[in-house]
Length: 321
Ligand SMILES: Nc1ncnc2c1ncn2[C@@H]1O[C@H](COP(=O)(O)OP(=O)(O)OP(=O)(O)O)[C@@H](O)[C@H]1O
Ligand SMILES: [Mg+2]
Image (cartoon, rainbow, N blue to C red; front, top):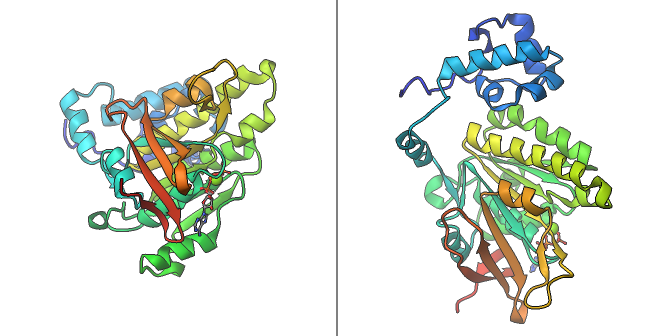
């Protein structure tokens, strides 16, 4: 099986029944690699490229034949996960909580109320992701999809300087995209299957994932449409993590649950769709004396531990218990 699973990144012409014209249609629809074709549902492929649905089915089948990905053994999956990289958040406590940092081939979600530190953690990750692996990084560049206009280059500059890095170079390696509404957000995320491999992007941040959706789809009658769109978008992000061995980090807000009388009345927004798509969920809360609490919730293999951190001019730092 080894060697066969080695995916030829941009050899679309090697696909059965795909000529140069078809290949360019695929590319213009953002399907630039054989991998991208394999992981995109044929209906979506047809919509993006204007190629007929039945032809898309055939192209997808040809792509799968080329790389034999229908079944893999658990051993092969284990091997694939050995390529998984981890990126430090700058806080040893949070890294430990996450089993050693945020993972590639996974989506990590930071949830919490306003001002709790979601964006600060994202900014730390923007800097750390660029470091070589022995320094806790992913040795790659960063895409930051900013839906709220809260990305502050000055803050990244400050964090990078405090780490003794060349701040200008750090800023050069972060590609920023401001998403003005949910459709724009979808459009930007669609471009990533092309943009990430071309630019050695190893971390994609969407801050916040859900803000526009909550603002635009108000009322019960729009809920299912909203959830469907959100689901599609989250799965596109998940596919990126798999296809390019990169990390996706999303932020999410909390909403009050009026039915809850005891304990924390807040719960993550986005319902089951968010809960199921995100590999690891970290719930952030404000603690005493300006500290913050981070807690793992429903992870497939991380224990439900919690830890404390603090936001300082250097970024985020541990609080010793
Ligand atoms: N340079 C700094 N030094 C110390 N603390 C800072 C600095 N910059 C920001 N903070 C703190 O970070 C907090 C804001 O965190 P952040 O912007 O990450 O919140 P958030 O969870 O993203 O909120 P929202 O939901 O509104 O986006 C504030 O409490 C602020 O005081
Ligand atoms: Mg924020």
